[in-house]
Image (cartoon, rainbow, N blue to C red; front, side, top):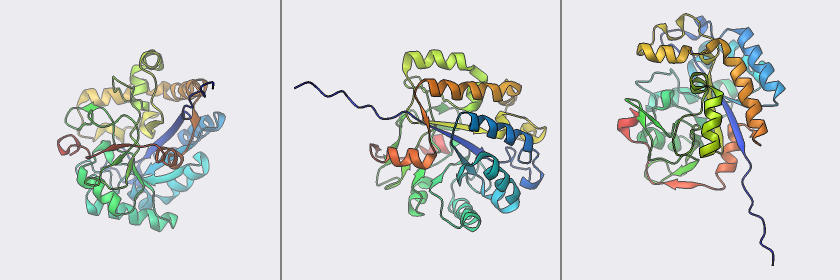
Length: 294
């Protein structure tokens, strides 16, 4: 009998926006980026042209203190919403109080429980993963399967969706942010601005592309207001990195969406990526290392 052709899983791209103030000391009501109606409208136009779905990971303080921002983003970008901690405090990214307060803000605003969580800067710990599972979250999307000195070292974790082992998170599914296979270079808006789409195309041609491709971005990737990074405790080179090609960012983003379409990707919400991933999971016995996560 002739051999049946091998069926490959569909190529899925999940675009995600971390809806935050960028600088923790700035109140949501006073953050120009969050109230930049022109920028949000431009992003909405790009998403509409490419029929691209979006998931917004929103900081709980924004839900409490600037609900008008959430209403406008909902109207113009039509995303599904999940959680991005309560205060976006990188020193306290996944404590019981931080997660619970974020969950309470979400439930009060949306009248439902969240499915997914993303910790600031990807700083999730094994204890944080266990807390998410205990609180009923279905998935986490904090892990960068890469290495950033002093922030995280997740090179030993899978570069694709996996379910945490019983000792770490029980049934919780991790949907890691995208990274180029083998070389583990993160595929996100800030990286795309800095290295350029041509550089990524070259890497993809050699090493392939992640699937699903969970693409992370922020409003400050597209427009830097004076407060966005000025007060952040970051090295000068990091601030320069975030500012690279920021005036061209919208064009770069649109070009990338077109590239994904040509490579056969379909745009999905994170909930859809979760449902697909849950069918075929790579188990991992442990969560992220504390040294890399905290």
